[in-house]
Amino acid sequence: MAVGVFDSGLGGLTVLAAARRRLPATSFVYLGDNAHAPFGVRDPDDIYQLTRRGVQALWDQGCDLVILACNTASAVALRRLQEAGLPSGKRVLGVFVPLIETLTGRGWGDTSPPTMAAGLQVALFATPATVSSRAFPRELAYRALGIDVESQACVGLVDAIEAGDHAEAEALVVAHVAQLQTKMPSPDAAVLGCTHYPLVENAFREALGPSVRVISQPEVVAASLADYLERHPAFNDTDAAQRFLTTGDVSSVSVQAQTFLGEPIRFEPCVT
Ligand code: DGL
Image 1: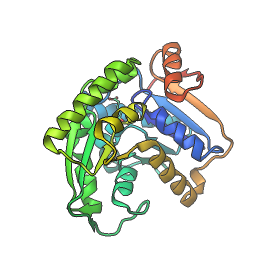
Image 2: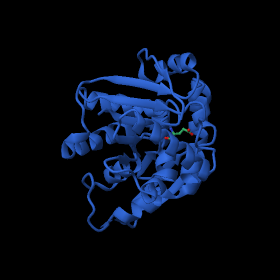
Image 3: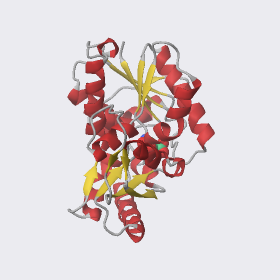
């Protein structure tokens, strides 16, 4: 069966593109919940219900493994989905843990006690819902102790990116980095904790300066997915088929998607 990739809208395409480069034979079904995006300004219960419906739609398409290629859904809904119990044979993975494993230098899926990383200063840039969930420091504390995290809710940035307004998006990056630096003047590392942000990664790098290690998600998640599929080959259907589904308007979403993947994509309608 194909691997399902769920996002609130188009941001998850940055993760999908990296996954396709890494796993060119793997089949994927992408679902963007464009009708309900952005998720990052919604309340937690709303995000949970939308994520649950999106995951169910991908299971209905035959995807036994679903990646939540959306930090907001991963931060707010993943734990609750898993605690509610997944149907037998189904798996849902998020995009937060691979980021943290990279940041802390741990192996994929390492469940050993937390390592000591005292003194490391980390800046998290994410949506308001991801920041308020506090999922990043929580998941980090399971894996490493002594890391100082400052979070910046990047209000408006997803909307500017979705609208293709690069000037506005870059101005917002500069403003959010400046605001973060009032709380943490010299971070060692910055985590771009939103699947839209790779599209403005250069603006983040420029605003943060060369001394800050910027951890961008798509390649990290793709590497962790490749490792997972190697350990669980039953989830890896290798006929290289790709399908793109959206709850939004098929033609406008298909046009916007080209900005994200740099190639024409034809979306099909989906109701969740
Ligand atoms: N793609 C989502 C994420 O990674 C953000 C977009 C939204 O707010 O819906 O957090």
